[in-house]
Amino acid sequence: MVKDHHIFVVGSSRSGTTMMGRILNKSNKIFTLKELHFFSSISPNNFNQKIDKKTQTVLLSKLFCIQNEGIFNVSRHVHYLKEAKKKLQSKSLTSLEIYILFLRIVKERENVDFICEQTPNNAYFLKEIIKYFPHSKIINMVRDPRAVLYSQKNKWRRKFLGANKIPYSESLRSYFNYHPMLTSQLWNTSVSHTLSNLDSSMIKIVKFEDVLFSPEKQIKEICKFLGIKFVKEMLSVKKIGSSSVEDNNIDKYIDKSKLDMWKNGGLNSGEIYISQWINSNFMNRFSYKKEKFRFKPILFYFYILIFPIKLFFALIFNLKRNTNFFRSLKRKILKK
Image (tube, rainbow, N blue to C red):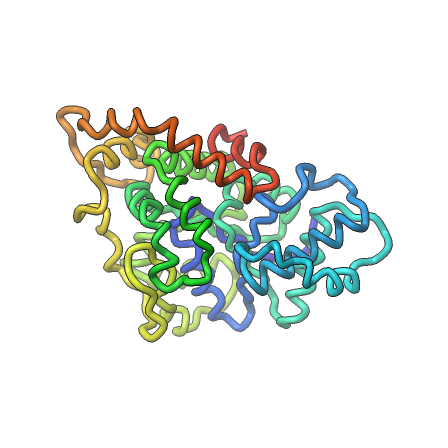
């Protein structure tokens, strides 16, 4: 159990977690980290198992590397081994303790009250976060699953919309990762993890659409929940990170134009049908109005047929990136 106060912004990928992290980073009391992927990708399987000094050093160096250069450059962690060794003591630590040490190092360096960890995949590890960080707060972003589908469908294009540091291999991974059935199930499981932990006062669910429609009202409520002061600068965030329009480093505002892109030809009938079919109950819970279908679209059967092929390539590309792939898969697909 950790007494430190942190902020975790979680949610299904492409649900506005990055935007929320940027908003909170406008507070002089908060420093928002890059997506660390500690729980889902880089930590050993058992967070509480003691690890040897070499493994400790590598893990801490990876966290330093990701924070400075991003998750796609984690292989460059060797350049941070010396820094990691200086920060580590001789005693044996667990991977969770290494993670906590890293958060404290950044907190002291930035001289802030709160560190904000905005890795979307942490939504699948809410039980661990609630257990180990009971004094922290969790902002859980929820977005219309069809909008998430549209964004994930085009995520492979990010490299060509301003994020030129993304490797071509990552663009390929994003392309093969997308399938309406798989992406819809990931959204479903993410929401399921959230709702199964709603008895915790640590969690606040925030709908992405609400932030876009009434940003000042929603952000003030979030600030009240976090115990921080609202500042007008929170309404001015860079328009970067979209999977459908080119990055804009000049204009700074919360852009609601992206709300209905999935409706305007962004998704075909098969994709919309699959999303609503898999996520029907949770869509009702969050008041997302569903499109009506008299019959199953022909494209529904097409996506059924190509699913095994897409799944095979997705497994190949993700095995290379994720050191704990099967643990992560259980959390994301089977909710285990």
